[in-house]
Image 1 (cartoon, rainbow, N blue to C red):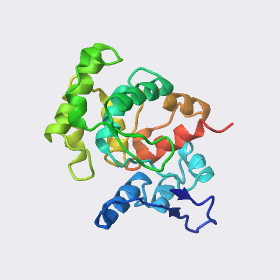
Image 2 (cartoon, helix red, strand yellow; image 1 turned 90 degrees about the vertical axis):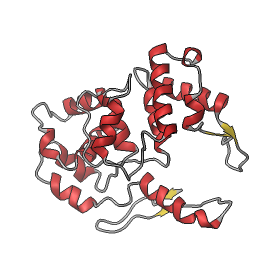
Image 3 (cartoon, rainbow, N blue to C red; image 1 turned 120 degrees about the vertical axis):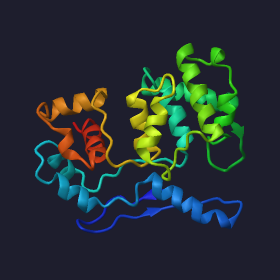
Image 4 (cartoon, rainbow, N blue to C red; image 1 turned 30 degrees about the horizontal axis):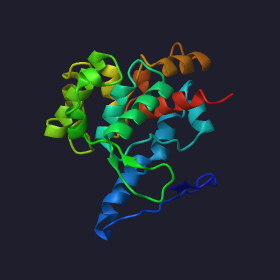
Length: 237
């Protein structure tokens, strides 16, 4: 996909998508997945208006108008990656995910450089021996238990089910805490009102923007966008 470099103030930015489909009947589903991936149904004007008078998030929104919450095309993969990333660095999580895909993903032939395997589905992950996974045993058991719930249909991660119900089901699984459940809600469910108060990046961002007295409750029902603006502010010099 290609994202337009910029849009004029008040204008519209476009995403150019190119699909390789075995069946043209999959076009509608592919488009829907891309829309979820880039949060295309967001109303950036409503979000900007909500934060206009906020001393913490307001300036961040004005610096990056129209910032979206990144979604995903596969909720199960988001959940698996979230567990893989518990208590490790981003680079470490990427390494473990790469090993999981190389060892258990389905080989695929494409003309996309580097794309050799598909991410393993939930049933494949559920069948793995947690004792043999390259991670602490407790996290391995959490991973396979989560994958089992996804494979059986007891847990469904898309935009259909009630988000609060999905969160409760996630928290009921061993090894799934509030941060992981809320991150999954943010990325896989497209929840517009998620905030991660214990996230290290959020804490650093609030310290940088003098947000010690910030009231995240006042950012509802768009706390997911406040979260993304705080994370993104860390990239600024």
